[in-house]
Image 1 (tube, rainbow, N blue to C red):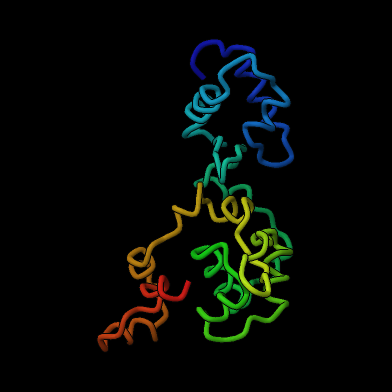
Image 2: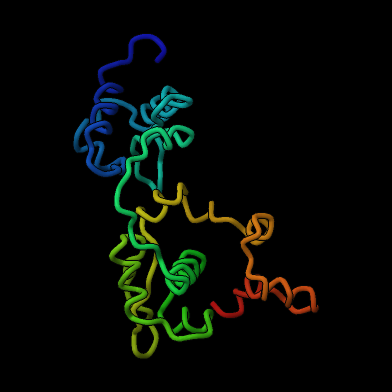
Length: 197
């Protein structure tokens, strides 16, 4: 770090270091007070830790220290592998991420099949999806959105960082059926999502 950091900067660093979960600026102020410029302190710490073994990162408006991505393999521990998400759960998660807030009926319309209750339960238990209120239409269906844990797990600062269709195509992640439809002159299901949402 450059020179001697001031006491406020040190207090922000200490609060973030011991935090059990990522902190919002408002939560940080509860610990360190208003004696300094919090935004400047966070920028300074982020710059100071850039390129080091740990980095200060902001995910969904919350700040925390995390292991540098290129060193994560060194710290990986052998543990029981958590249950992998089913294809239905992955599709449901993707629909929620790209279209949130979205109701179960809207998810089903996009997927073309019913969503099992267990699918949404698994996503909520993982901490990646949360109920986000009710849609103001007849029946007032529950709507779902992603969480800060979702952003953190996938290394996203915000939903704007989700890959676009060109990124997915370049990575080879588009469904072969979707690519075949495009080749026949049909429009990609992913490109036509605005009509459904």
